[in-house]
Length: 335
Image (cartoon, rainbow, N blue to C red):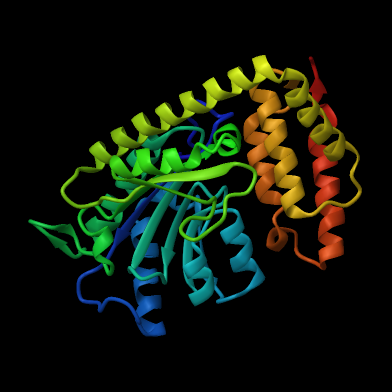
């Protein structure tokens, strides 16, 4: 039985990996599908998933109501895109959120696989396996010269968007993000905030993803992403060690203050919480702290988002503080 959990290395710096395939089906117009046609496509995909009993029981089929709190919470946990939350549609997904199949974006289907750490190969293998299963049941729009046809020309070819979420606070503070943007651009990649295009980076979290989908194979994209991510991770690690050797008191003070806030706060807003979690991640990476794994930090960051928590702003701030106090109970300062 598939558990749809994927884990990779560098978990303290590579927070998560995501692979997303855009696909369209023959016989349907692109964009502006009627509600009936959208549901028809969703039902066909659901039937294709259910043709494989070994994995079918891991999935659920739900309708996404446009603008609902449920939709917004799924954006905050990266399970669906902001576009799907805004427009509404359908979601076929595993309970743990490792796999999401979105129906209702600009393409008929967006198939997404996520994992923790740096694991593009594992995510790509699972995405390809599920896409092949669906394609065996539903003919897809494919051109022998161009590849998979998509609503937006920028996705044509492989239809692949592969990304890694990196924790780069030292590069950010040292003004190295502009250099990263240039380095990535020269290799056909782009740098965005944690929630993709147009989003702002908070806590030093940045998303590195490919821009080119035509004239290059899926394997090549994945290999390039791994190589570039590893290079960026090394830059961040080197900066951390350099700053630690020169300004250890200042660095450890920031980390310890963040721990103090998380352990004692009775109410805390989202951005302050994420900034503190960012400092804790640095502390874990630099061996200043112990008792909590990096993956737990990332899962908690998702749990404390506004729509996930629900309620009034005051209620959210109190609940967020409670969750963070619980997270840091076992966190120890070891310097």
